[in-house]
Amino acid sequence: MIEEIFLKVSAGKLEQLRDRIQDCLGRLTYDQIWMRNTGNANSVGNLVLHLCGNVKQWIGYGVGGQPDHRDRDSEFAARGGLQPAELSQRLQTTISEATGIIRNLAPERLTERRTIQKYDATLMEAILHVVEHFSQHTGQIIFATKLLTGQDLGYYKHLSNPAHSETTP
Image (cartoon, rainbow, N blue to C red; front, side, top):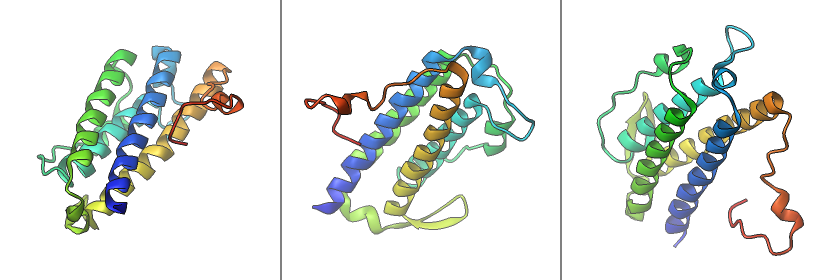
């Protein structure tokens, strides 16, 4: 059934993107993670905090019915304090909880409506929003990591091997 495929692919994509962010966090120093080029730019650390807040609000609260305790402004106001390992652990926990909610969601519930962050959305729209939003910020984190380290992160070098094993593009 297409709904089951949607749920499986959504959870898998969030895990793949989480792993890429964790890889980036492992390549960056504390100072690089919290660096801002300008006052109106976000650091990698801010983006990780923002993603955790967004996922908890849209999936934890919106789809899973957990309490909504998000303080969105603090995600962007942070100027350090969390070490790379702490950010990585927070991201790991957030995505593990979210993918559990997504994988255990009954497909027939995807058309249920919720108000999340003042938006009226179906549960399917909420999940799609999170995957899309997570993907956009992951791209920013990857770009920043490449700029800061000068490294090719190698996420697609498996494509030159005919026996590559990654199943999600």
